[in-house]
Length: 273
Image (cartoon, rainbow, N blue to C red):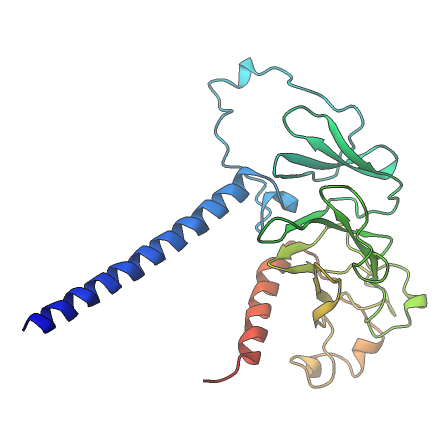
C-alpha cells in the first residue's frame, strides 16, 4: 500500500512537472510574440501586414501633448523601416541603408550606394542566441545580406555576398530582364520567402515562389506558379506553358501559404517510426 501511494505521488509530481514545462514554454512563446509586436521587424509590421502596433504609451489622451524627440533629415519615404533591438533600419540619402539609435536618432552606420534596392523595404533576421543579425534585401534582381550590427556586406552569403534571382527559373538568366518584387518578402524561421514579379507578358520568366536559407543563401524549395509536368494543375494549362509564360506571385499572401507548404514538405521528409 505504501509503495502504491509513493508511485501515485510520483506520478502526480511528474504530471505537475509536465504542466510546469508547458506553462513555461507557453509563457516564453507569448513573451517572444509580444516582443515582436512591440517592435517592427516585418514589412507591414508582422506576417499579416496589418500595420498594427500594440504599443499603448501614445493614446488619444496624450497625443496632443507630444513633442519632437529627434529628427533625421535624410530619410526616404515609401520605404518600410525596420525596428529591432533598439535600432531603426531605414533608407537614407543616395540609396543607402542606415542604422539609427531609436532613442536618440544618432547614426550607427551607413551602407551607401545601394541603387536598385526593392523600394518597399527589407527583412530582419536574428539567430536564436542573437549573435547573428542580418538584413536581407533584393537589389537589381539579386538577393543580398548585410550584418545588422556593422552594416557590412556578408560575403559568405550566396556567391560573394549575393544570390542571382534570375537563376533557377527555367530560362537563360541573361534573357531575364526583371525578377525582383517591389515587396521585400517574408522571413519564416531560417527561411526568406520571396515572390517574383517578372511581368505577365508572353515569354516572361515565371514568377515562382522561392525560399532561401538566410545564412547561406541557398535555395531550399521552389513552388512553380505555372505547373511543370507531373505537378498538380499541369493539365489545366496549355501544353508546355511553363516554358513560355509567367505568373506573378505577390508577397502579401505568401507567408501563410509558404508556411503551410514548408510544414507539408517537412512532414513528408520525416522518417516513419
